[in-house]
Image 1 (cartoon, rainbow, N blue to C red):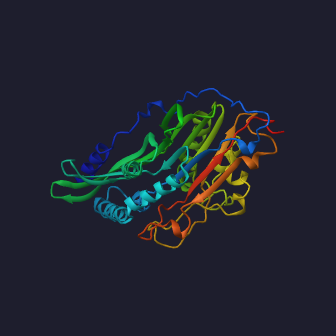
Image 2: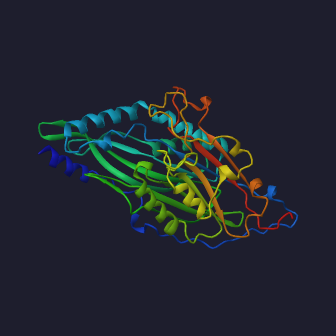
Image 3: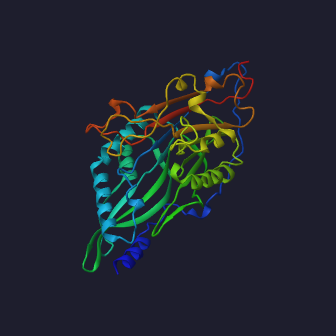
Length: 385
């Protein structure tokens, strides 16, 4: 009885997406508007376009949850409680404040966030009795500081419910959660277009389906359209699913965008690894082959360091264990927008959240990932030559 009741409640507790995902793969890019720049202006004079990407981290280790037999209800209840306790001990409010610290210091034009979870605890009547919302905490911190940012896109991906307690009549407490991608736009940046969606390739795990998605805004920056796309692809252990998501990203989401396109997010493909390593997939190489430059390779000084962004221990308390480069800021521009031979002077990228000084007051890392702040300067070919 419990198994059937669990399946019913898990499916019934799916939270509705924050945007209609029926537009999956749809976009309406605005044509290029190349800036008019005086012949004496050099690449260094061009106004940089700054972006920030960060996997915010849900706060606990989901690995044990998604390897369970969901028919074993007591085991599911026990694992769900362990996970929820980890989330609550991860100092979510302090961690989100630390992420806002990074935004506040650099004031990027657009921000892309992954794993911005919303948790809701429900009683046996499906009435909310508690929870945590990472985005609400970020928005509250932004508002308290008076920072000039608007939440532009919230794209829900995986959404499910798992039991926290069972009584004689069935489930008495349920943890409902929704993963989300978020884009924030600085208020002085003019919005031209936006879209978001969920990838067709997903991972069914009985009553739970793991889904991933993407979000895109097109903005005007000094007369040139800049498309900013953030995504979170499936993990390396599920490489065929990741490959299918990557193909949809390249063929439907990124195809046909004119002007400057910036891809920023967690691709789960380690640029520092070799084929056969657990952290490696071919996604990084395929995206580069599609015309995207990796800012870590293009920036003059960044490539002298390792650029690792993943991953701290799930407890967030251990010394830094970053040894993978799976988070990226990548750029592709129309022919004629990047001066030949000057590209390295047009880019900057920095890892943030990887130094001991970046820990919260309670000694935790803001996330299990470090973040990236990237800058792109775009001028037409021939300027300053």
